[in-house]
Length: 67
Image (cartoon, rainbow, N blue to C red):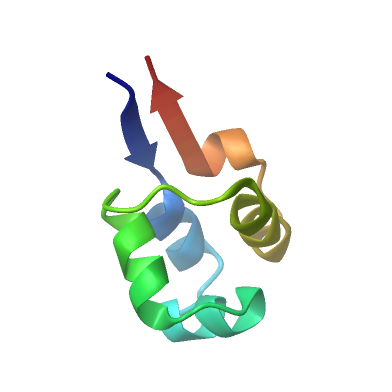
């Protein structure tokens, strides 16, 4: 089973963004950001890329999938 680890909260806070602000930047609801931060939701590749660009952080730093 694959384990999903999210570092999104750390990088969002480093960029001094609220969940709402990041959600607006990547065109999703705040709840989606909250679920991603708590590793309750796996992002689509498209969303992962949008978040990566918004935070200027590589995808592999934000989201880790362990087999």
